[in-house]
Length: 325
Ligand SMILES: Cc1cc2nc3c(=O)[nH]c(=O)nc-3n(C[C@H](O)[C@H](O)[C@H](O)COP(=O)(O)O)c2cc1C
Image (tube, rainbow, N blue to C red; front, side, top):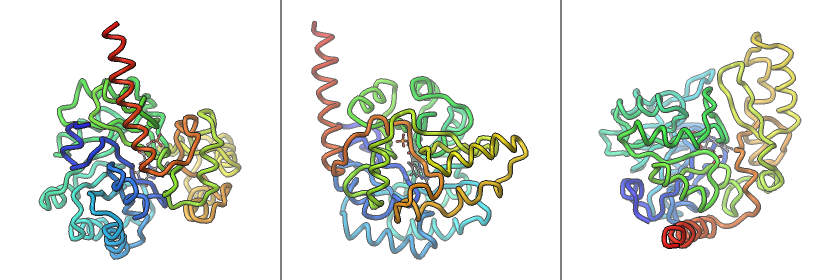
């Protein structure tokens, strides 16, 4: 399948693996890229720019295909060394960067000067238009369904994607709730040039996370995610567990007076415990409603091949058949 996104990123299939904290290691990115999609290393999971440089080198040992790096700008107590990470990305010869969180204006000139394509992840049309206006090459439009940070507007992709198509001139991919060939065809129908998946890629053979995480996604239904940190205007969609229930109780009890410090135990530094050690109740971890559509643990190659085959069948047979009836 050829789209503006496959051409821009020099990939075989219009499928991207979004940056994921403590999931987007070299093993994950290489597996997705080797399967013809665009794998992405999560920059800030690496503790320093030197570690990121090392992770990029490890990924290059595992694939000759293009892969990207995610740079997330979220409210954190101590700001990471963004210039250092940008330097590691440029010196590592990376050609695609996925930015997320606040707008990437401060790093954009350096990335663009190095000939890097920037795809910014946004949860609203106004943020997508802002990304377009500052010179991003593409956007990932992340609907309310998504695992991670859906923003504060709560607009699902059935509305958000066609709205983006109506307003944007740069190409965009759908993100949030995407799992299979149906997701891809629906995204293309609504104006996207490809799709981005997070949660679906965690339940793959190569995802470098504890098996408990994969099993938790398989067992979860579409009813099992919760939104936390809404009162802090840092909303995150997470899989429900004991820690999440504690956060929600505190949010209920403290209302608008809640501070980050009140929930620090449940959210700060919990990812290694969950993703690497498999201690599932150690804290809140991002997971999309799409868990309800995930029932197996294929390899990335099997997953992407299946999505492309399904998309082909839907377009040629199901939809084509309706037209020719
Ligand atoms: C465990 C997990 C961690 C994530 N970490 C990040 C992150 O560090 N930076 C980022 O930009 N997005 C992050 N995301 C969001 C994904 O890149 C992607 O936008 C989202 O998962 C899409 O929704 P889906 O899970 O329904 O596919 C994360 C998602 C998950 C599930």
